[in-house]
Image (cartoon, rainbow, N blue to C red; front, top):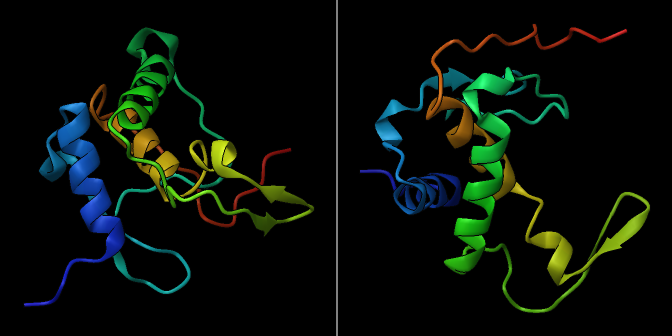
Amino acid sequence: MDQPTRSIVIGEILCRCCGVDYEEIPWIESFVDHHRIKASYNGGLVIVRRKFGILRQWADFFFASVRAGMTPYSEDRAFRSGADWIGLLSRQAVGIESRQRCRLAIWSNTRRVQELPPLQTIR
């Protein structure tokens, strides 16, 4: 049996931390390399209906996971991202865990999810 990837392990742990059933998150195919992955939203744009409480849930999941010590690279080391350096406090809000928190907030509140085509641009 294949070993689970870091992303899968983190996803399962986050689901337990946030009270979300991991199996409820749908599988999709990644655009670039066509791998089977759990739904992921990394386009920099999420539009939600206020009545579903998705953004509040996302924030709640963020704080719950930080309280549980679930932050990437817990040691205090900085790394460069784009034009700036990312330190310990900034890393708590970025990275794969943030995308996974978004996914959990969406799928724990609604099944009505629509995605733009991968090459769609917003004007």
